Image (cartoon, rainbow, N blue to C red; front, top):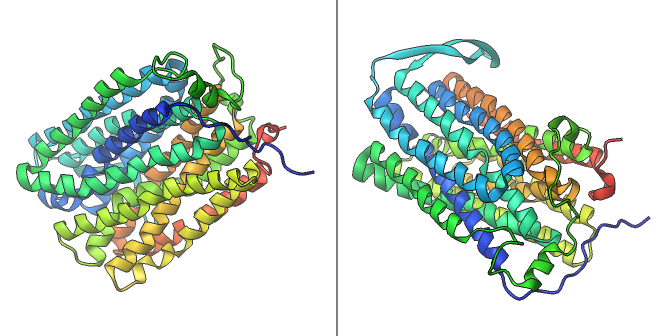
Length: 462
């Protein structure tokens, strides 16, 4: 039988307020990345100033990933319970405060250490055990700061995905997701230049204070501009009809869906597995690519900022192109299933060459290879997020996205710790790049097995 579930063609509406809402999401994500990546840009000068090892830095970035995982999980739940109008400004305001408070670590004693229970790497072939580890007091300060930051930032993406599901018809969801997700790359491109300039001008303390304050401006804009589609006074009737046409029906007061019941959906399991396998790659790119480029190609701080910005600039196009590509296929009459999976396959294949990044002789060749892989990851994410919207009930979308983010960042926390330990033991990134080169293909295989046809009829597990 031919596949169904192809979205019908809708007449264009009067007005584009939905894209104004998408622009708010774009800037929230850009600020999110500015605040989280400040530490990766300053890794070398902070490590020299405070005496951190690569393993110490691995604990700092791992702490963020673990906390972000819980923030993603509970942020998705709170977004479903409170609604994004209330939840998202709480998330942004809180993480902005904690981002600024990182600067207070300057007042900690440089010579003091602290011992705590944490994952530790042992043996020449690294594996994880839980034991007591000792880190400098300054590293501990950043660890606690990153935990607070991660808990608050985790709710950003589940809330944004829910906003897109409420404000966009099915055929535009991947494109809208790609556009707001591009904020991560824009924030990442701007971060090396902004942070390097601020660090040179005012030092690391004021750098954290200033970047943390930016999010408060966004909260004011959100409060002034955001309403739900049904409540927004500037939304035209034709645009509201365009948004609602083709969307799945939901109750006015949708029931709270227990987390355990979400595991009864094959699509939820597919998303979780893909999140575990491929999801940690982006955290690695964020926190270790600047160090990889700086150390492998002997760059100074200024050249590292340019190289890092170039990497994220290349990666910027991926989310938009990935969403556009799937939308283009849908517009040409492809089924939802075939369009989504074709887009995912193209993205997965573009990551494979990342294995060769440590072996190339030129920094620009490395940037091209890793940048294309980062771009493919963004396109992959845009379509994978949209798969959740395509297959799950509206009242459960944020919760499922939150569960997937939890799985990805919990796994990513261990990946960051392992990466730091590998660097201290071997000084080489080869094994890490080799790992990520094949994870997207494995993820797509899992998706195909669990969700043979993307659509409402393939959502149940039994």
